[in-house]
Amino acid sequence: MEFILNAVLALGAIALVASVLLFVISKKFAVKEDPRIAQVAELLPGANCGGCGFPGCSGMADALVKGADAGSIEALRCPVGGDVVMNQVADLLGMAMANSEPMVAVVRCNGSCENRPRIAEYDGLKTCAAMNSTGAGETGCGFGCLGCGDCTNACQFGAIRMNAETGLPEVDEEKCTSCGACVKACPRHIIELRKKGPKGRRVYVQCVNKDKGPVAKKACDAACIGCGKCQKVCKFDAITIENNLSYIDFNKCRMCTKCVDECPTGAIVKVNFPVKKKEEVEA
Image (cartoon, rainbow, N blue to C red; front, side, top):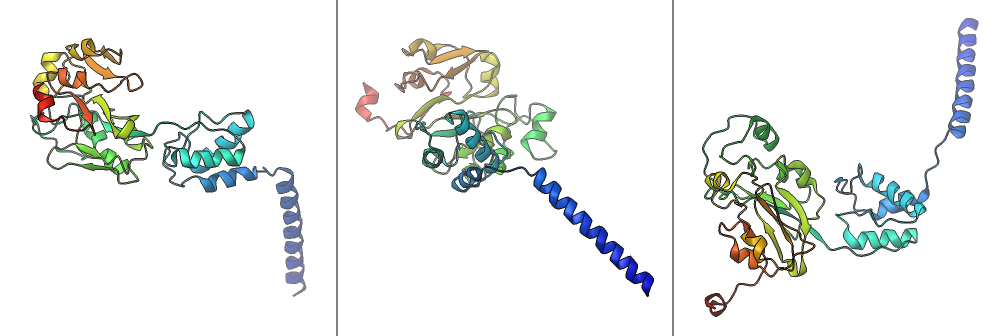
């Protein structure tokens, strides 16, 4: 009995000493967190989408506080919360925040089932990443959408859906937060974040095919053939042609839509523009 009592006392003494040591060590090596980080984190939407470039909202909050201490948070932005949340964060941290133009994801591929016929059948893992790793997919275009919906699975906000008729993803601009998750998910980089534009209007090349004109046109009726007609008609130097592909700089584009009318394949599209009246079209 005395042996058991001594053992219990010894273990109790060891536990007491260990707890004291742990307490002292925890106090000495404790990492104190700036209370502003928790306050900023409460203002952020909590989506943890990674669109800001940091691992979740807590990482963004830490970066914002450090940025405020360094004198600027202009380079940091929460795409989900937008200007409303960022202005709240700026007020909390005593900083000024310039409003930015809203962005939206656009799908730069018009290779629908009608424009881009299937020439092969893929019988493997139904993901864009897997299909892309095997080659060109089911069509003759090695650049366009693969249609497996990796982008829809990546979107946490239900802003993208696959159109069963065209086989292409469609973006709901009202739901899109421009977090960029779909951009990262697409192995062929056909999704891009662009300025939403005044009244939601925007003009862009809906193609990423870099093959030469005849090859691109054979693979897809709506492909950009790099003919340069759009570049010649643009008075604002907003269009460049590189690797047989036209690209419209949304910072320079004034949305005159002349390039849309000039494009022989319909590769350039305009979104949310009013329909021209019959007399305007005839003129």
